[in-house]
Image 1 (cartoon, helix red, strand yellow):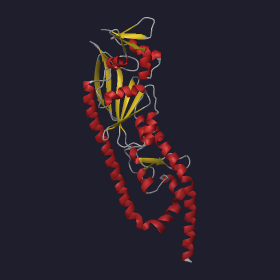
Image 2 (image 1 turned 60 degrees about the vertical axis):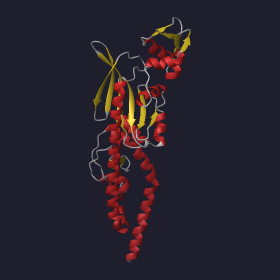
Image 3 (image 1 turned 135 degrees about the vertical axis):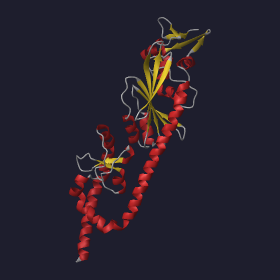
Length: 334
């Protein structure tokens, strides 16, 4: 009689497991896709399943699989405990089935699960510490670079005299490049340094949500470690008219950029290359005509990815150039 009861219980469990498995893959993908959107809309500090306080993006993995529920669940519950429902929906949906599984199958494995949980927590914290150390180390290197030479142009204009200001924020490090005059300064360009706590596309996207919309054109430098091909491909397709986005991996010396040509020009100030001033960049695009260096808007458009009107606007702002009347050419003043 006892054996029949146990067989009946096991049969019910297998049916329940099969039903859950049919929708689990789809639900997990939906949960992962929604995590960043939810975090962007509201601040969540505690896991809806275990109640543990969560202080890092890396510790979130998904939300409750109950239809319509957006309660977030931490990675320890999701991955280690296999708990994909919040506390409110747990008893209603799989409470009895979960209790039966623990009674029949998992009682002897609890010590191993506890060990794995500790190892996962330790691994997560170690990874976070590694990224923060990389970002801190790179920020010091970047400070040294920018004290010597800063980008002296925006997509709209040349900045003849620059002055840089540095501000440390909760999200990262902000550099403001100002146009300096005798009695004033005017912000013209931003450089924003942000860490990336993960290697997936969702981690990259989440880091970019930490970049507040700026009135000024901004160069966004994301500092990470390993990065998936999907994340790199996603970055290479970005083309925000107000941002140049670069991903730096200091430990490997790799730099990835978005699709914009101007971003690749800006990357010279970020990489180990010797950066050029805008004058030097434009000089390299010019032609020597009887001892005078002449530059056309066509050459600038091709190099910077600008329209002809954008190229003309940039060149007209350069005090070291003079336009040739009724042409698309400019020559360098002596």
